[in-house]
Length: 125
Picture 1 (cartoon, rainbow, N blue to C red):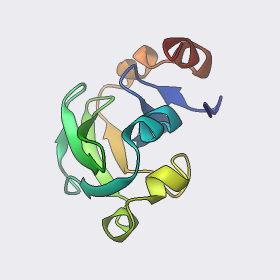
Picture 2 (cartoon, rainbow, N blue to C red):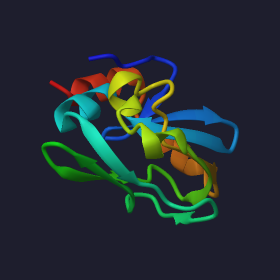
Picture 3 (cartoon, one colour):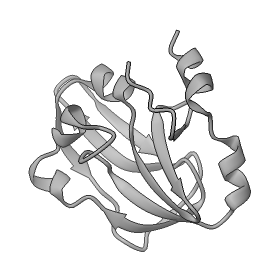
Picture 4 (cartoon, rainbow, N blue to C red):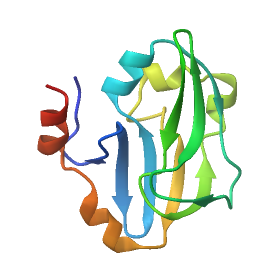
């Protein structure tokens, strides 16, 4: 499994690229491989309030339906509109073109609760 060292992770398989109070969020390589081919996403609107641990995106795959959980409290500032027409970008490039949304974090102390690459990798074994 690909686990980039410059990202942070949640135990529920979301990755976070932290840039100050802005955090880009996506599904990890492990999560996308477990889901299989992703066929549809129900993305939140820009401005949607995000609550740590609450479902934020519904992901439909050939095998199942799953939720992407918000890794932090905040507000959605952007969504990857390209996923509307090509949700398989998540399967093809989950850490690049397959990013899902961006959050403006309201409680930066929550960043301390995210896992580093080593700790996240240990949860996969």
